[in-house]
Length: 67
Image (cartoon, one colour):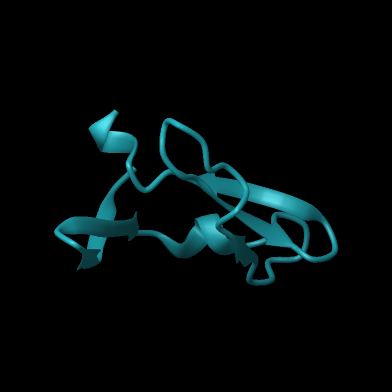
């Protein structure tokens, strides 16, 4: 998957996938709501993108390339 760097926080880059398809509900194509509390653990953070009607559609790991 290709990523775009959009900003940084305290020197840590913030990256998002280049394609916005990860944000869309597979059932209706609606934009999903980010839930940053989904996957925080000792390994880092993951952000779930959830459709209010159909649940979690994808999970983004902003630190995937650093693991």
